[in-house]
Image (cartoon, rainbow, N blue to C red; front, side, top):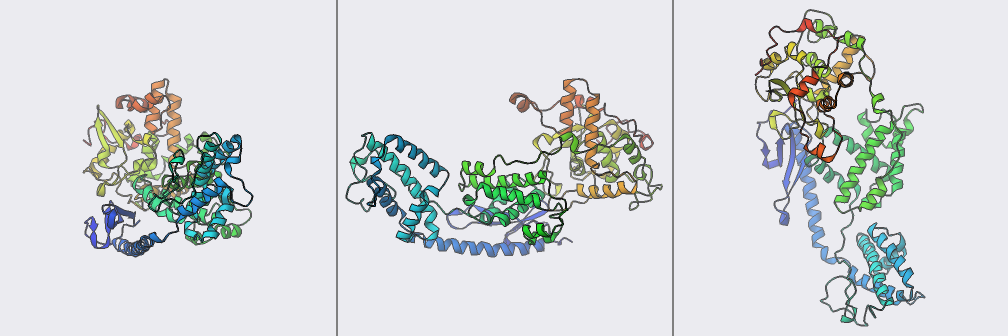
Length: 591
């Protein structure tokens, strides 16, 4: 039950703001960041629950702010890494007094090879080659744990610059790097030659790198971007949260640059052992993956590689976010995520079945379309024909092949008349307030499709005019939005399963989406030229293949031409003539 809160959009006292049907937390950052703000979805439509979650976020925000102020106050107390690194560089170039000769005594070929290796280690943040030097310097100078990463980067940089300087010495471009005196006290931070005699040396970068955040520290910023920039649905974000939770369960919560390819491989192998029922129970969230696997029966079906690949894709997106934040290199991201192998699934044409002619005949001769006992007794024969979502959506899917959610979430504003043809406008809308939001599967799914003549004969336009007189009225108000994404389709999906069982036409894998395969197959069996094939791709929201110019500048075929192709779609085994409405040949009824 939703709270009866007045429909204002902002609640300044609690940092709550309502966007559409959901509440979100919005708070400005203080100090020099004035004008910037934190925005996080509260994932609820109930004001009281949103108020509670906002209070929790306020508490964590204040704690984080206090920690940040302490960190700033202590910033001046950090270890002088530059002084340590200057000594380290001098030791490499001049010899360390323990049997290691000056670097300039090495041959040019070896120096060039070592320089290439040093650059590669720096680019990949690979501390393996210098771990001994890193540990020795840290112990010698008492470097605290929080500065060890910065020291490691500095050591890698110093080795690159040492080899560059040694090469100049070997070829005679520079007689020396350091003099016997120290640098002036006011010299800029970093490795800088102290005298004119060393002007050819490239100075080392001086900023001290910030500690690399752990995976858990990046989770919420990642989902802020997924929601606000990528516009991901709450359903998809929930799946990605599960991926990250499982990954950290298996591989630990470490700095993101500390993961190796073996961690990702171990994660994927673990997923393949999870029972197929994982996630069906809310208790799974609080259990370790290893415990769930151990408790599953030996013969329990496991996750398919299609599901494993989806988790891999989600993890890849998260690690790409770490790259964008400067916490991973592109090379590290590629090493972690590229070229993992997955079991080949069925060919696309074999993955979903279609309705057989006999099944279609049985379905559309059942009580929903011939007469049922009442709104709550649709599968029982009777005298009532109720023209609502359960009546219209299967017919719309059969004669147009669009996806369920594309039709279930239609509004009056999406039904329009152009070029003498009635059409349905399928476009993505966001932040549209009470008018409703819609997410489409892909960019190609945005389209305008003509209304099949059979729908007009069945009285669909009259239904629209009566049910949705205003532009922002939903065409199927009997399907209340549900879930964080406010989708209407799931109600039909569940009902259609039970209905097919009741009328004895149930077959696994053959449901609402199978109408799409029927429509595509019938049309492709009927069309005769390339332009009609282009029309079918447009009708179904499929991306066109071809040259960049053909794809970029093709804005879609004309509505009349597409309508002519759609008119070729027919089902002789489906007879709905007894439901035709007199006078519906006039296609301007809903104007």
